[in-house]
Amino acid sequence: MKPIIYLSFFALLLSACKTSGIKPGSDTAIDYSETDLEIVKANNRFSLELFKNSYENKDENILLSPFSASMVLAMTANGSKESTLSGMTEALRLGSFSQEERNSFYQKAFHNLKILDPKTHIQVANSIWHKDDFSVEKSFLDMNKKYFQATVQGLDFSRPESAETINEWVRENTQNKIDGIIDGQIPQDMMLYLVNALYFKGEWMDKFNTDKTQKANFHLKNGKVEEVPFMHKSSLKAGYYEDETAEYIELPYGNGSYSMLISLPNEKSSLEAYMEKESLEYWQEVKSKLKETKIDLRLPKFKFDFEESLNNSLAKMGMTEAFNESADFSGIHPTAALMISEVKQKAFIEVNEEGTEASAATGVGIVVTSMPMLTKVNVNRPFSFVIQENDSGLILFKGIVSNPNLQ
Image 1: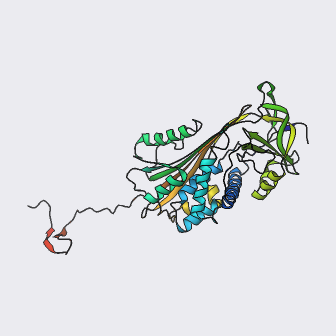
Image 2 (image 1 turned 180 degrees about the horizontal axis):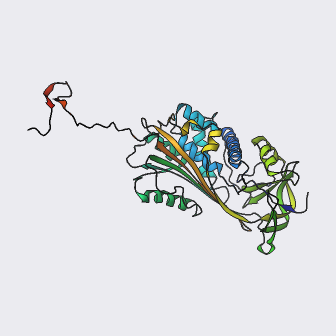
Image 3 (image 1 turned 60 degrees about the vertical axis):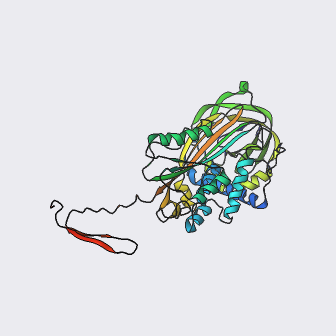
């Protein structure tokens, strides 16, 4: 093992540390069933594939919360039917689970993630915002209230303050780290938004000393170097594993229930080679081989935000019909022709000597596939009419208007 580890790339995982090198110290265990644990695997598969589809060799910093996306899409799926539903659950890698199994898992995670570690602040919130004159199926709303604790509110989408109301909810539930999920005015054809907000703040189990932070070179993909502040800690106990592709360093937060797992490609390898190899099976193998090790770690401080439309990535993963006019969201409204216009996520992270603060908001916008078609009728020529009793059809009057000006 190298005496000093320089970080050129990281993968962030906030998770319970059951299978890693650092043992969690929480007395609160999540009572997951075997089905729940299979759903965790499915969620992690979704996470890795979504990130890989979004990465596409970008040179910028990237941050996604796949869990935030999967939760709000699971809420949305509760209003989908037939092939639209199967496409959504396929993309989420949850196609082999029933609606009850999916919803029960998210209900459990919603509650338990917040109580695992008193030193780590986790905030999860869900909401549904609908056009005030658009009637949403009660069963859809009730299901998402029950399993996702979703708040529901009708708004006049034509008013500028409606977008601000939704954005203020996002700010409140991300500790003001995400400024909002709606940019500009709400589109005229928008019928409802489903929004998830996720906030994480964890202190390192073993904090870095600010006096040890010094600037050093960070090597970019293009061969250039930039001077950035590096935190430093010697004799740090961390989960560690190395193979021919990368080094893996797990840094626990609080009582060990959550951790950051860093993936650092070897100097002879590359970020692209690592991303190509990364899969759920590989990820599980790495986690099983992490061992508590004393290391000398240099880790850069960083802080950035990221915004991404997830439409293309989700479509690549099988969720195509939900985005087009053949979508079936009759569980939201029995007759309205609805489809998803955009799945957008905004995320923020800051890593420093104290720990990590991260937040994300994911919004699903649902529109009518076309504005209601009004049949234009202009009675501008001679016409006939009757006045009738509608139950029997009895005609009481019949007439012709040849010239409305004639009296």
